[in-house]
Image 1 (cartoon, rainbow, N blue to C red):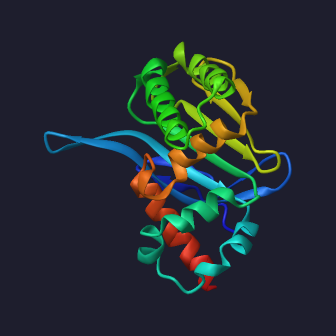
Image 2: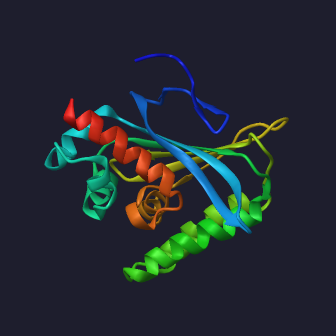
Image 3: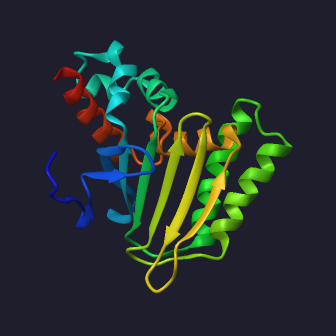
Length: 210
């Protein structure tokens, strides 16, 4: 695998990251953005890193085109539930307050939990922990948020780094909350970044065809 950085709208992403166990490969990338009065406002660049063994869980889709995969929520269900480590790197392009990011993440996760009747006291406490983590942060350009998902048991370590400050980290062990954070970023048609979901479909279709 090459060591060249992958540029996502001017933001460099390494082609792989080494976590506690195995190197994970960059399998998809994109942006979160919004169009206001015909202007595209870009908020974050996103890179999704996966263990290459994830392909063993996606054999059912071998030979499918990326355009078929991107329309298939079952494919993203299999990707999310695959028992492999997953790592999401989010680099801030447009500065926002941590409280604004907190609201987006908190409401997305809560809505998903409520929709499947899994929003109990334990989930509320775990989600509040995540919300509090971001509340006082200031997401300046080039700040980095990472979500490292361990597969068994399903947990996530969230870290935040910004210029001039040390790394801040928390670990979330409530599997329902962790799953919904993962779905917010990788959940097919309901994901926060359609360009990232499309990029994942393209790379995984290419790898499944190899």
